[in-house]
Length: 230
Picture 1 (cartoon, rainbow, N blue to C red):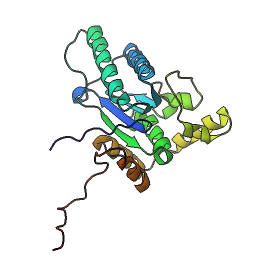
Picture 2 (picture 1 turned 60 degrees about the vertical axis):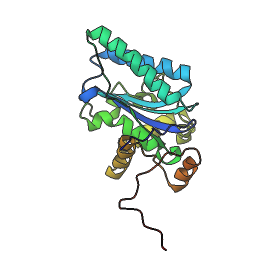
Picture 3 (picture 1 turned 90 degrees about the vertical axis):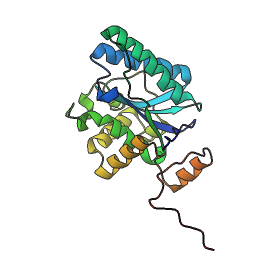
């Protein structure tokens, strides 16, 4: 079966993941981590892609971002990925592929899923046993939103400003949101949408997306289609 084209639309929030080939490490030390994040920032600024959240793990990274053009996210991922492979191979004396084929990407309904997706990204190191909590992990955007360390790479989504009337109130509200965590259903829905490339949102959101793309937005119902009545 042919793979579905990725969903990518300007002005929509995209949840993106790219991981190492065969789950191999894509960063070996802090120099690699800084290089990857610097390339992300440079490409995102060049292509006018607003990066709302990120996490950099040993064998993959995740982004939450909004492009201003249809090809913003594909060009971001292709350019950053290509430039980083050159850095990584040159620095570590290796050759060949680093990434696992295609990156994963989907669209989310910001009003319903922006904050849960941000928490999902922040809590990746906790789920993987790399950190006891989100704020202790230095390679994500959580510390920026929690008021612990400013991050020049981040462009907050407009919905973030609704968390409070002052920076302190927003930071405290966001830290509390992440600390409360996600239930299993929320984690499963976000992970499934990202892995399979299905849009994540309610019926009205899906209907509005359907006016902008011919690409299937959700899994087909199981079973054969019913035959029309004669």
